[in-house]
Image (cartoon, rainbow, N blue to C red; front, side):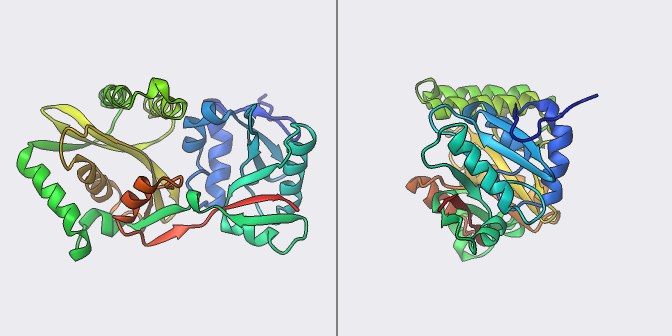
Length: 302
């Protein structure tokens, strides 16, 4: 009989936990990109994600030696007691000077903002960018003229095919990711190295994670790919998008093709995650004209 940890005991997140955690995350119908099993799995080593059950809530902590923090309790309201217990655990057991719950959604923020026990503050760098699937798939209208021009240049210059990512293509996608890692010198950057490891784990466990993907092939070789999944009943989330920049226009091409071929007509929205406060990444995400942003918040004890 399988046993699961109950608070205050935690276990490291592993692939075997998907059968329990994915249904609970899906039942919550999250709108923030962090709250999928895939996202937690591919970043599990970087953040040392561990999880526990507290009644109807899933508790998730980034149990890092240098700076532990928690993600929000996932479960039905009210969750104030679970949030408080998490923060006290971080303070009293992990000895965190200023314990926090990070990237909390508007629902939890709304529950806690009326309490004098918590300080709730917006975290703009982690707001998710959400687009209409139809907009990304069609790129219609004057505002997308530059994107269409890039794609037109690409289609004139290269003979390409689009293909759904299947287990037969994952090795080719991984080969491209390895090239990306070499180009970015990710061995010298711990966050990029963990990003590569997450991509590798996603591709190596593509079927088990039930991921969706699309790829651009040139000369029969994968030169771009995108991986995502359903976030909730109306929204897909794109976790990974990599391309060979030697092919001009290939990034807008894979964005448009994956949106059109896989999500347009099947979901209303596509969440393309946050900009992490990086000016260049923010400009790139804004250039696709998001329909709206998903707010996230930090929560700490008052």
